[in-house]
Length: 197
Image (cartoon, rainbow, N blue to C red):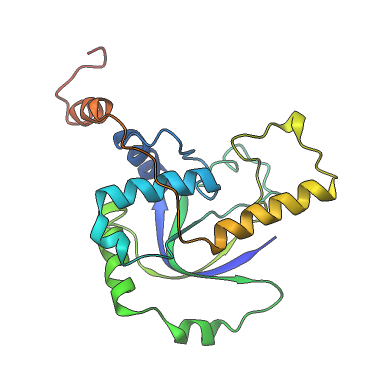
């Protein structure tokens, strides 16, 4: 059950959903953007929208907070995820002051501030400690019937996929999606279209 120290900002879930809809990010799951396929799709979308900003953020990461012991109805969809340019995973211990004193370079800081202004201008930039008690949720291609949760092979594969995603800064890019739906949603949100147009 990892704990992360990260530098970044909170991205409200409602704004994640709007971004996915308006930008036709069909391969993204807005309720858990930590998964590799959703991370890849979102990074591609952001790179297309803000190419200069994203070039300055080669290690941009999305981190989810999650408590598997929370059984309330709202537990499966947290109110926000985190967008970070620096992430340190705490295994047993971590010198928080030393990590924060290392800081981030000014180019990364400026680029992340620019991205924050596009995605979540009302949120603050800062250092966060985030708990994710179940970072290995099922991937899109898996189903609960196909996974043996007691299998060491399954646990090793899940760990391997997560570590690969964490280390990787080269994400595959998908082709551009048609923008007709995007225009419809924008016109709908601006009140130019009725619900049934």
